[in-house]
Length: 485
Image (tube, rainbow, N blue to C red; front, side, top):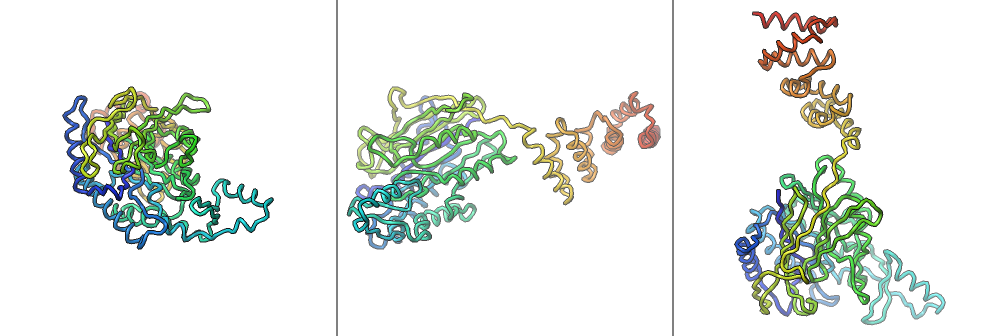
């Protein structure tokens, strides 16, 4: 099974080169369909991943910032909706979106701050302020524009700095998905059973704003997402993660995430990560630092709509095409880049990355094999709850995979089948009965299902033909008489 993904990022449109939705959509759809005829061919996508920076955003002193942001998000929503219509049959759940630093509302963030008169502080105490400024999750902010120190005073306003993104997100998914307001809840799980993969979108803008550019994911959000991934429906799924910020930067940069995050991805069974932010394509192969030989691959995308100032030297606008083989656990990355210099009407073609060319192949870490013993107690408890509520089919679905490793599961499964009148299930799972209750149940089920030849074989088997248990003697006599009629 192959999973085909379009990975776009950094959609923020340069006000000096305002590309329209019509021009952008036409150029992408044309390139995506044309690439199916290239050599090697790139299939049409199953999924669309948008790794942040949906809009350009506003400055601190932008007039009517709410109206500006709303207009930008409406433009982005129309574009992504039409892209979904063209490529994934209009199924917006097949579009995975996360926020980026451009999605932060600067005026709202600024309104949450209270000035701090650092010059009035005694010189010996300024060191303490400096330590507070650079502390992890610091509430202090420094403005280089006017050499002023500020402190987050209104936490509600600071939390609302992505309010416009939340509104856009909820509207895009028509209420089927809701983006949480609290940082410790800011993740989204996109499950695709038909593709046997699950994608988790994270917010890497925890405590991030224009005056604190470092990326971070709230540790509770990451932990809660990974806890949910231990759920039954995700077992054996290929795990992908999406966020915005890059995990490394140059000596003069500080707007990236701690690379240790990749170790957490490996430890929690993720095979592939997708991000943007750095406006250039890249492939990382990160190995587990604590033994075990596991790894994660990380792919970044260039900016889709950024202008000249957003592009690094020698890098063009671009986007990624990924083909993931979910059987041999390999991936192909096909780079697409803008071939012309007319920002308002792009033409896309094959891109290139260093010596790799336009296509890069790399093996993926296979998903962890589900350990049945790890989940047995959880499944048994849930199955018992289903039985008490007379949800026999639900209980049976949980218990059937466990009967070879747990005796209690066999007892409960037989009860679920009997109470639910599932004779076919009894015959399927207990065809070779090893106890009196199983023999009685299987014999009755074979008769009810019209499996008379199999029933005769069971009744004539040495184990049960001479059995001295009263229940067995009764069912043996009753059914033998019926078969002889």
